[in-house]
Amino acid sequence: MKPWPYSIKHLRFRQKLILSYIAVVLVPLLLLGLYSYYQSLELLQKQAIQGVRETAGTVAGGINNNMIRYERIFDSIVLNPEIQRFFGRTYTDLTELSSDLKKNVDPFFTMVTHLNKDVSQVTVFTKNDIPEYGNYIQSFDRAREAVWYDQASKQKKTFWYYRSGEFAAVKKFPNIYVNEDTTLLYLKLDTAHLLDTTNIGNADHYGFVVSDSNHNIILEKAIPDAAQRGIKPQELIRETDGFFVKDGVSYIVLTQSIPIPGWTLHCYIPAKQLSVDATSIIKATIVVVAVCTLILFGLIWMFSRSLLYRIQLLHRWAKQVELGDLRVSVVSDDYRDEIGELTRRFGKMLQRINELINETYKNKITQKELQLKALQSQINPHFLYNSLSIINWKAVQIGARDISHFVTTLSRFYRTALNRGESLTSIRDEITNTQSYVEIQSIMHDYEFEIVYEIDEMILPYATVNLTLQPLVENAILHGIDMKADGKGRLIIRGKWNNGTIEFSVEDNGPGIDEVLQKQLLSIPSKGYGLKNVHERIQITFGEPYGLQIVSEKGEGTIMKLIIPAKEYE
Image 1 (cartoon, rainbow, N blue to C red):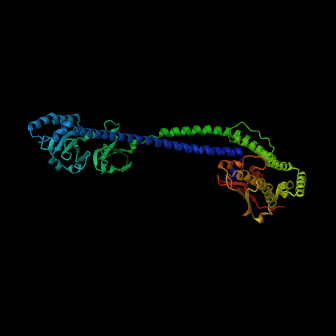
Image 2: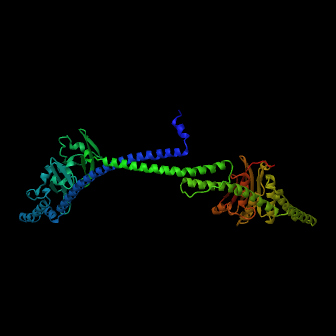
């Protein structure tokens, strides 16, 4: 019995397509259903935890608002001008002191305690010689005896004190009419109003613990059975949110900061109170997966039937191309899917291949050869040579040696330039042709520029494309030396061996070429043997790695480099 991978390998395409659809669609659908179920469950749990966090934020905000209210009570007392004057003044007349006390201090402190039920005591400790007056005014020596004095006397801000059920706040009077080191304001507060949970729902399910930065317990409101479960407030104090387990019961603990005094609220609730009923989620997931499966099976049957015919048709066309028939007529369909795009691209590919064979390859190479031969045939060699010989003979007769030299040089130039109609020539002949052209230009320029040749003799037997150096020299003279504003022109022609390649360079000391023009020179067509023409003929003959390179800086001259492979000339 053959293994199942071997059996699948030899199934028909339709069978493979259906099996792949089932595997690709059904498995992700089931995984997606499971993922959706757990994500929904997790989302509901996060929402429940967020509800706990909002509850903690509400309680913490209430505490913080109370602390802000207490700060305002402090400011209303210590910044009151009449209170400041009373405790900053030295009384010599007791009658006047008693009058000010009953007129300003007593009514104001009484009003504070009546308007704020959670303020059970208002006391000012003073070093001034003012007699004690109930709880409202007491000697500073009594403050020194209090356990909170050492810490409160060192702070300029409000000092909050909480020990053994006593919750109070102490603040120094500012330096307006009194000295801050001589007068302290003490407020005793009722904690029942501070931790108020009456405005939150299901408050019995929550427990709250308020601690300071040193993890001291300030306030606590425990869940109803916290004592029976052995939950201690100190166990719930933590810096980060998380879970707390006690006797097998898990509790969620969330923290919330209270900015004004720098305290932290710890809110905890049994995790089972946040449990989510997942029955409805499971039912909904099963229904969605089942419906999607039925729809997908119907779509699988339709798609496999429609795709198979088009794939078979594309297969038949590809087989014809494999047999060498590149004239296959590919009929593109109207479908916009991948098979339709593949069919259209297959047709375009065949069309492009035929264009490359018939036009891009054959036509362009033929066109370059015809252009070169047409240019060379513009001059009738025999007529030109005979005419130059007659001129030379006449010049010799009359003793005009300079004319004879010029005509002989011109004749030598055209003999090497025409090269019997061949596109390849030896480097020796190309150098000779270039020297003849340079000699003609020197005569025409009345020998106004300097010429330097640095040619390695070992490269002379190798082959190059005819008339490639002369255009470079012509450009160097025309656009370099002739454009030089001052000083003597200089033309350097080099040829050297370089690791299996031959490198020519034509250097001038002209004005140079800017970067924009450098990028255009090898791509812009020009009449005759322009740089683009030379570059393309080198690449057509030897390949794309070879050709021209331009090195130039504005005002620093120009170097035209020509690189060809080392190829023997036959």
